[in-house]
Length: 433
Image (cartoon, rainbow, N blue to C red; front, side):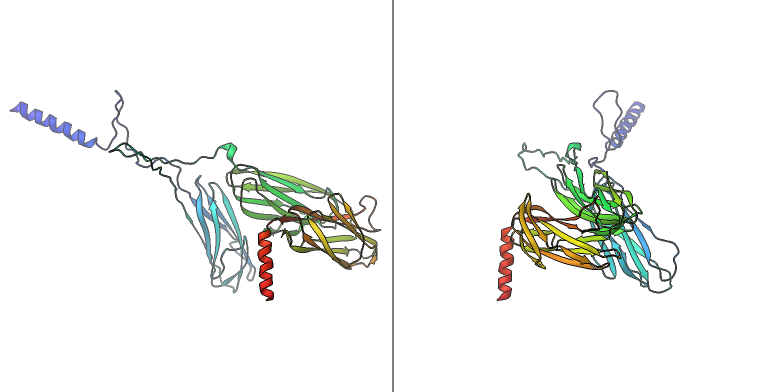
């Protein structure tokens, strides 16, 4: 009887141990202890963690605008999608400006930042103007989405069995990462009080898309921004172009015009970055020499043209000194992709074919009084696809032997899309009817 009771106890004890070990995986290898509890989910990278930081002065004089620096940072390695920053305007403040501009304005400002990659940072500079002397309480919020896309292959499997569920985390090989390269064209030497124009071409030479690409320029104190092409924005001594995505092999073009306040060699740094791409830097230097009284401003009315489309290039010659300019001569090089239509005024007296295009030369202008300016406009038609360089050169008695002419250039992209041109012409015809 005692034996039966003892065996019953032993049997009961063993059964209890077996029941308590069911949730654990048991190794078939001798001498190994059962492993700890396992998660049924695959060990993928953690979901994104998006943090928001806001900087603003704690105290301010009444009536002074307030500048908020809003920093959005993805602190994980996973991408955060559809990132939106929201800022409901306080009742006693109004919106002045922001960099970048809001995607939506009204009682609530919104910035749609799109996808913010792992480790990426986005900055918003917001300026609000108080409308009374009460304290300003401003609230900024961020929202984002995270998701996983998987593909299930529909393949035959043995009867009674289920194919395994496989999840994969895509990895970008180092050789497949985007590669950003920058080419800068600008003067090696320029007069100190004349605008210096720089042309930037940012290219993705990698095999994958460059996500959330940016180009920015930091200028020293002795260089001042005159103009930055779209979508550039200047804040103090920094100019930023927020570019979005650049496809493999794709490129973006930008112009920056600066003016030196003192003579000497002045250098600035251009930097480019994108998600998963190390930031790259380029140094650009120009030697600014003694001031001249002659200035040029020239631009194309359209940055891109279709074949058959017409545009024009205004050219302003400015006498910037107190004394007049004398014997001013204007030469214009019209590239092969453009055909001359007319000039205003129609004062050119020389026209000839040269390498790369057609050169026209205007009659010599005897004098431009100090502080005055003269404007020419050259009208053209796009006739050949490609990237063209329209160039003007101005000569005057006041230029010394070191610089015989002041030269300006403007780049224009011509697209061979005749279907769109025909649609435009058809639309004009309908409007006339």
